[in-house]
Length: 156
Image (cartoon, rainbow, N blue to C red; front, side):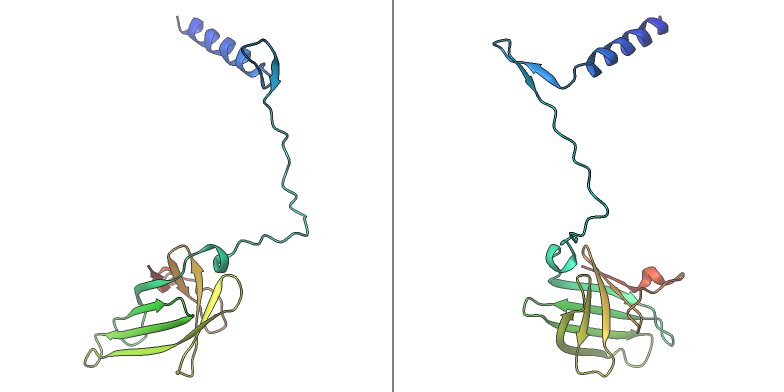
């Protein structure tokens, strides 16, 4: 019984695959429905124009708790606005009186996937822009690696 089912399935698959992409219309004319396969040339000089800057909606508020060397963590809230300005709020958890530090400034695109906050503070922050995420980068603009790497992600 199982042999008959397997043979029947094989025959149906063979008949279906031999169709060559042609269909007969009601009047008996045969039409070709196959499409020409055009491979993507990986060596093409045409750059892919899609990047975070022109493909993602980064406007909004991102939140997370970033690692801290001498406290429990830094509760961070970063709001990016349509006029290329931002508001950054940091609250150092378990340290001091729980005072919130707020900074405002402008953000600029460094390339199609990274922004830099240009604020009033001497140090600037760089973030890799992802789908509904901002990943804080180290001082040289590189992604942070190691076991705490996923702790540097702010989510929308």
